[in-house]
Image (tube, rainbow, N blue to C red; front, side, top):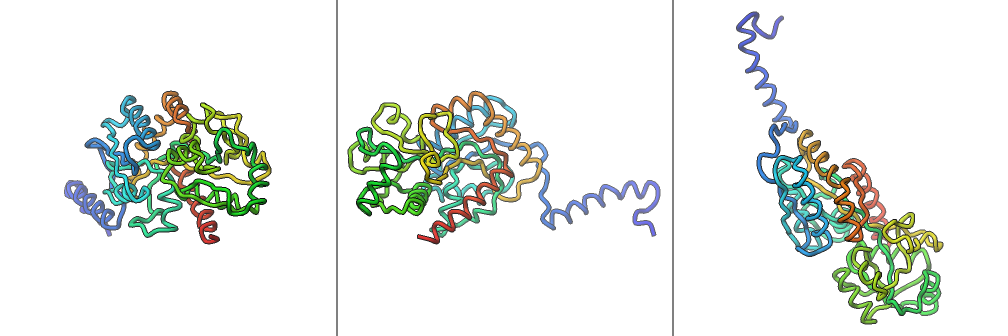
Length: 326
């Protein structure tokens, strides 16, 4: 039996039927297309204050996005600091999934923080647009430190267990410091700091003996000779600082990096996700952003959303095992 009446009446009924089908699909949770997206300026939430390293990264990226004009509207950086990144991450992931509110966040609030604190978002329930930059963690000492290599540090730590001070703080630093102890059979006296600048100040003032930080945080003082890097936790030496040996080159199998990703709430319409992938992918791969990242001491990644989400899951699993072992 025919579902539609024949002839003109059938053609007249077709739009109504299609509208009904659309309503049914919407009711079943199918993401609606966002024709004409974006219809207003897009907010990019940064979960740390203005002037922070990730804020500088975000503003450099947004400047390029806006200059290229591929989005059709402007992107505006909005700082929502607090809760070790949880406040801004919550604001991003609780927004309406229409692509008008996105975030550029470090991986910590997604991979590490939910393992130690109660957060009001599901770190796995996200849309990942792009991985923007990576920053391998490194161990640094004052410029006049007696420790010239990882071997020197390990020898001293074994001779004086629990007495050599190591500055860490955020989980992206505390966990590799702990992993280093496990790999080398050493034990340090851990001192927590709020960020890289506080650690740099403590090292230069000889208040701590070793610091864990990102290259971006200590780059200026490393170049000035006030700090010296013992090792970097990348798989291979990095182009930004080829003179810094990796932990692996010094017989310690430690790899650990922090990275910044562009995310959005789960449930973005497919066409919106494609648009954001295109716009941010183009900006990240631009020579201008490469130069900005180099000045900040960051390595450009440009991994797409799928690859970035897989890396988040992998790091979450590794961190869970390390945190459970504490």
